[in-house]
Length: 525
Image 1: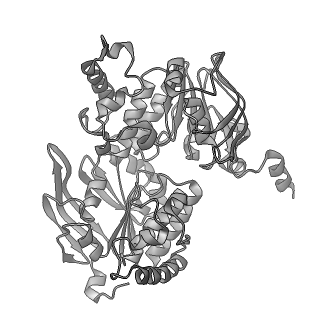
Image 2 (image 1 turned 30 degrees about the vertical axis):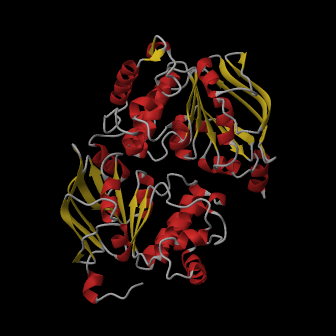
Image 3 (image 1 turned 90 degrees about the vertical axis):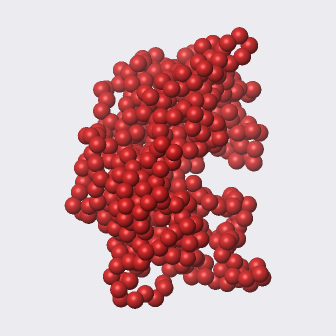
């Protein structure tokens, strides 16, 4: 850690005074004041589009403020670019990582921070420093592994190591648990506590109130570009924070009547899949979903849930070998030669797990994305041509009903926040009124107000007599939304539970591959 004078150590790590930033007519930040004490974990929360990421991008030098002042360690500084921020001791881990996938961990660590023309010398020094940092902060990762071979959790460790290698005293993390399993999130929190105890200052941007209450010392709340409150975490609660974020009372639980299941809609029998590398991903899945019912699939990511959704959605992994039977409302669905268009025509809507890779074309506008997959619908045709005016008008209505912000159908999808990108995908699929909705990670990276909205739409679809298959790594979401819960482990369904007759501990055992008989044996031991 860089030696500092006593005055600097007494000064706040960060002070922002009157920061404002506009993008055309959109005022992203309005006169923001923020004070972050040194050696603390400071949470910043707010709805998607509240201006959190813009504010942190200003602090990291990605944007320049239209007005206002930044002080680091009590000293004013003009942060004109990210290199200036790094030299000021600021590091940032973005929600979508900035790593070169076909480079090794070590090569990513030194990229842009080489200490001379001899790359071999830089790599040697970096290897020794990387080993020290990994041991000190529990950030162990193979320095010679390719980034594309690492789990999401380990890629995040590389991003943190990059910042520490550049001697960051201030670390900004943007939605750091949005792509992590619960176990990976717990490990990250241990790392952050260790960094704080070493004197580092952490800014945590998140929408998850449970995480705010668990890990932060102080929390600031943003709403529509303004800072509306800054409080000590110990002196607040999730309900109060949610109301500050949204500007109204918010239900932190799913409010739904008991399900009234009807006839079977989806039936899966002995579904098996071997991928192109010969790895068995699904090992005899049996599953049924009835009309007017939400069936949740719980499990740690990577246990076959993704493959199940892709097969049901009509786009299995190329080269995969499939076996088994799938029927929709009594009609068989093809395993071989199937495609997503045929599935949609059969009455299946699909909100994929990765909105940016599978759900949207990021360079296309919101109105274009709202129509994807349904652009050949009769109401969107004008003779031999697509009726763009009709498509755009339809998108405008969906954007309004789903409160997409900003409500601009002509904005490229990549320029919306993650939560608003999710709303675009959910609006497209839900409003087609499918017989079966497949929905993967519905609220990943989504703020509290949007979570409440998306949950209500899912329940409304169920109440209209539709079937819903929900996949989520958020156990709270699975337990509160589902009418039945199936737990997957290693490509198998370990068991089914009713939410009111199970516990997080029971589901956690199944998620770890411990069968009910094994649980009973352990309890009696």
